[in-house]
Image 1: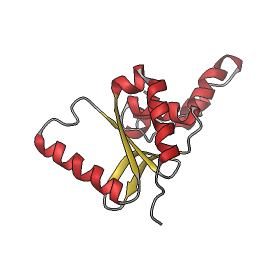
Image 2: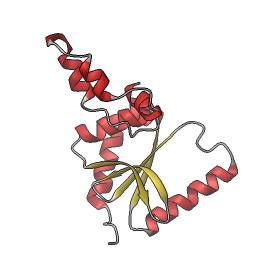
Image 3: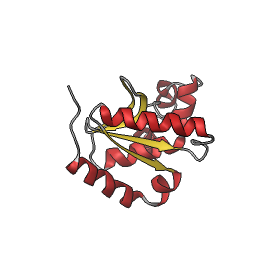
Length: 142
């Protein structure tokens, strides 16, 4: 919620930190230290926290020439996209996604796509696939 509010410009982290002083708010302050305001959805927040906890170098909302903005770039070589249920709502969206995937690969990146269920209920399987892709992966061209 905080990430969404920050992204909309409704609140600043400094305001929250100012109002969370004292011994009883340590956990809340620790949680706020992890908020970046970069995610476009709550599921991306969960994914980012999982990736960071797993020890990956995580960049969010990265712009890749010829591809556009991607949800995550892990360890400088693996693009991870988190798709909502309505992501492929029509043939045009599906075609656009195919072109983006192809461009991502042609630009020297691997790409994996996950949905809500993967991030929320299949976390270890998702992280295992990411680790495998990174071990086998390609490096970006320049």
